[in-house]
Each structure stands twice: as C-alpha cells, then as structure tokens.
Length: 150
Image (cartoon, rainbow, N blue to C red; front, side):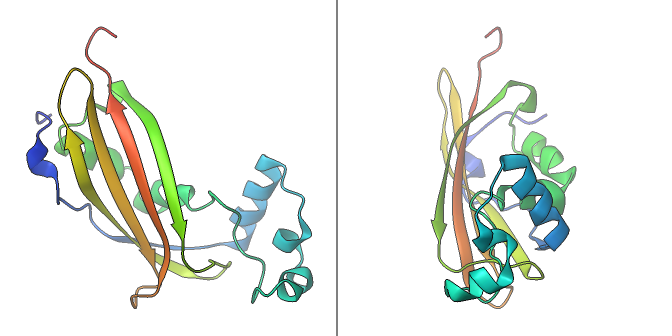
C-alpha cells in the first residue's frame, strides 16, 4: 500500500453509473422505517410536485457501494488510505435535482483535501449527474485514518 500524501489531491476515481431500481429504494425505505406516502405512492408524489416517487435523502450513499463495488476499496489502498484504520468523519449533501427510480446516475469522485498529521484526514467530493451535465447531488465525505495502535 502507498503512503498517504497530499499529492493525491485532485486524483479521481474511475467514474461509474448506477441505475436506480425501484425495488432497492423500497428496501431502503423499509430498512429506515420511512412511511411518508410521497416515497411510496406516485400519485401523492405528483401532487407534491414530483414526477414520480423520489429517492429518500441519503439513499445515494448506496450508489458508491453498489455502483463502484470492490474497486472502491482498491482505489483507497492505492491512494495510501489504510482502510483497516478508516473512520467515517462526516458527509454533507447539496441536493440540486431529485432522483427517481429508473434514473441513471453518473458518479464522479475526486479527492479534494488531505490533511496529514497525527490523525490523517481525506475529503472526497462526489458529483452525481445524469451523464449530460445535469447535477442531481453534490456530496462531500471526510474520513479519518486512525494512527497505528489506536
């Protein structure tokens, strides 16, 4: 594994696409106990101004794991991030346009900041678009890498 360096700022992971499946959204809704009819009933969603039932907030976190798969962890290792000592620090979302079942989302992940010290920190930005430039969501995630022995 490479050593973590500020030189990885600007590096990008391979882009990937993810098609939102209605069944996966329903599984997520059940898992989080979401009962709002706007997520379950298209007629209610349309009455609220949506074109269909939108995905619930934070569902897009699953895109990276389903769309990018095992390569995500290999890229982290290649960036010098010891995934065995990784801690999730924060995640922030900017919601620009709703995502609906059936949408194909293109995801582009880039390292935007690295802080090297007693506890290293890496910040990633994931821009999710329709593949033609229309932005759905911009997400920023920061991780901390614990020092050895902690």
